[in-house]
Image 1 (cartoon, rainbow, N blue to C red):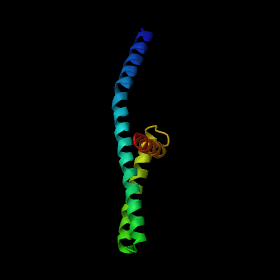
Image 2 (image 1 turned 60 degrees about the vertical axis):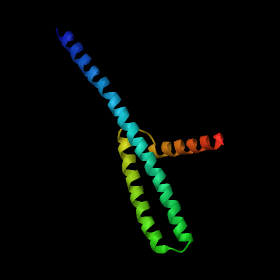
Image 3 (image 1 turned 90 degrees about the vertical axis):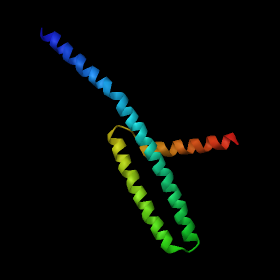
Image 4 (image 1 turned 90 degrees about the horizontal axis):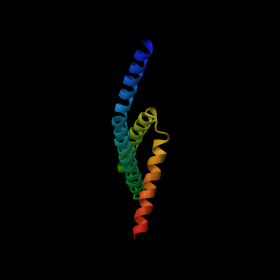
Length: 109
């Protein structure tokens, strides 16, 4: 009788665990996509800041620097959240994906 209860309990726990997996996977995908857009935005902020510094517009450059720092904090926050979910090196993965997309676009032309 004990074995029957243990098997039933194990079956229920396994079913519940498997049932939750797709939701977590979709959540990870959405967060990786969000992280990707954050990395792209940070790169754009970087280019804009460099442009303002080059043209000696230092007040605008300071504002851009603040935006860039805020974006960096957001990226780090997302990175720690994804690491807690089990994704290894999320920012590096995103950067590799962006580079691969860029190379693919170059290859088309």
